[in-house]
Image (cartoon, rainbow, N blue to C red):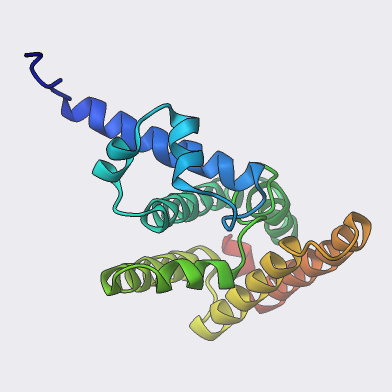
Length: 201
């Protein structure tokens, strides 16, 4: 009888990260989450279905982890851009085009409704976890941009509008690009107008 393979903690961490990374690529490749299946994920990673479920209880739980990591990455990249020698408006525009709407990112392919759908299919603790993560992002953004909370809530609504347009399939690429251009410029101007201490950014 062949003894079961012993998987080290390092291997488990690497496999879990591989699942998350491949799922993120699938979201970009399939331009959204609706058509992704567990079979797609395991084929992409090269693992069995049983192995997948030893890391994540469901496809939705896996996608949630992808989203959470993506938001952490977005915030890190935003901090880097805020240190660049650009005007505040240019920094916001650069973040929106190069990070938030990046071709290989997930923000371009996931709307707020998609995320709500994921949360509805997950146990309540995920919603609590999301509220905590959202609060941490809000506090971080308030510190970086020196905006009031209500202004950040408005900014979040603007980002939802951008995601909504980016995920639409019923309009031409030209119309989508033009609409996104207007929204990006509007958000950048909104932040620039409402910043309290622009000279300190």
